[in-house]
Length: 341
Image (cartoon, rainbow, N blue to C red; front, side, top):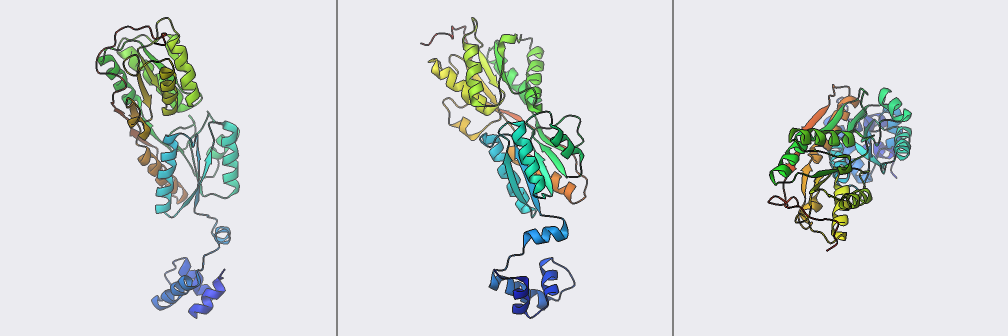
């Protein structure tokens, strides 16, 4: 590999001049700048990022710890983060927590050891000592999608309360009265917020929400399947199921089909977190869509502002209801959903 001395010799300038050109210093003549850049291209020279980071105390690298890389929502979020970071001159190292607080801490610790300039995190729980210490320490940090309450860190998120209300209104308008919910982990802000919004909307429309219609999931497909099977075994099964995440909705759909039942003829289904797959299911699934790409881009901008000493504030964007055919077009009549025929 060519060294900075090789570039200086090729360009006929000093090593200091090469350094000033590479760091975009203004006190370099256009002639010298042109010769240096030509030599860099000819020799294929690449600056030593590690050495530069030691000199400048910056690596131009961001860390991103997402809750579950297998969830299409977080995959899209990570993509938008990487694209925006690249546009601003930063690279991104991604860690997948797989909804496990211990794995989340592992990734945070590893990223800090690698001298990242800032950290984006979608927390898997209410905050481990490491997460709380990092958030309150000197590392620039931004929460995205989820957050840790009471910690003074900017949060970039979508507000789904109005969209959940719109969903309940939609189901109510179709004649559904027995509505059930597959909730996410209460330790996450998204899990607790979505069931709270659902309760409020149900109360607004005068609809009961018995405990039997509240199922505890973990944002994974298997939990959606398990909870839905329990709903279908009830003496009076629900007429509609709201899964508070896309993977749990797919698990619910599997459970419904395994009983030989059809959506929406036998039971309606809706989800939080719209994904591209929902257009291709049969029927397409009604879902609450978050502005995922803009959330990722806004989170990067907020983090870079903190890194570069500018004011950084929380950002809240609205989610919206996308109506498809999985909730039906007319009121459902009572059915015995325990039947497999």
